Length: 212
Image (tube, rainbow, N blue to C red; front, side, top):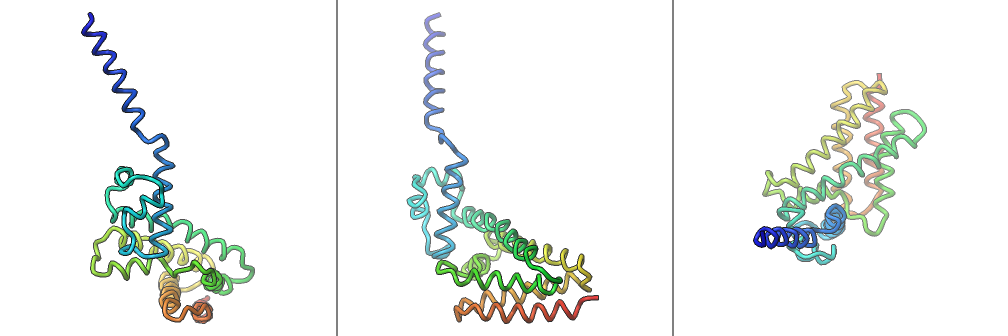
């Protein structure tokens, strides 16, 4: 009987210790780590930022970081995945808030990016920058996350073009996004938003030519 009581008490103690050692708010901790990675990766790049630096900025131990993200590669992929919907929502907002036809709405995407580029913390397209950094690692999960975002943006635009009478909506959407990505890349060289605005004018002409 005494052995059963002792064994039972040990289980209770171990259970309480286990509860104590578990993160008190696991989802908030994960969110804090991802936010830190977002800021550092976007500002300084993937290769330049260490796991130790991310953990320090998030206010956690490296062990805690690895509890939530199995590797730096995995965290880099999550960084880009977390930017997918916010970027698409920004496109959607610029698109819907613009009065006028589909030509004006497409051009508004470029105007929106040009405005964002004036912010002192703007560092270009995080998806393209990451692809450039990891160009020798085509199978990297962050490269796949970036490709998914670009496809999502292209599909979103194609859907709107088709709904507004644009011929060859898929091809036109791809050409517009090529202009957008070209403008992003050129901005990294010149740091001049007028290049994005010029790309927007070209995109507008392209869409206009393909309207039924």
